Length: 163
Image (tube, rainbow, N blue to C red):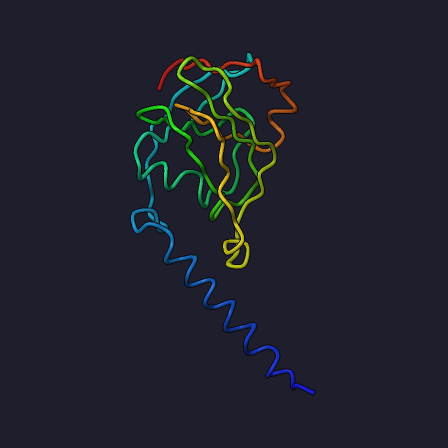
């Protein structure tokens, strides 16, 4: 019969290894550093939102990491230089999100609802990227439940008021 130490030691070692691997996988320019995001305004499905704009690679890498919450009338708009299949993951997120990808005309390419965060080292090891599978120029992150609460459908459009 194995002792408690014989059982817990490998589990503890595995947790440390996973945690270190997770921290090493974060690009160095996003590790707990403050990243300033420009602000903008968008209209989505008839609702006006103030957004943080992630329009550079360091800003897109950082995203909403480590933020405690996101009010219903706010979001983060990821702006890409050219259309592509841009995947995201929920590393170091503190709350679930709804994610919506758009083409250059503001049409919805893909939606994901209630995407869970990857907060701990163990969650990080099993955290998989969310892949839209379509060509998008923009991606909007809003608090989980926004899409359903605001009646967003596949026909809803994104209108950029200021970015």
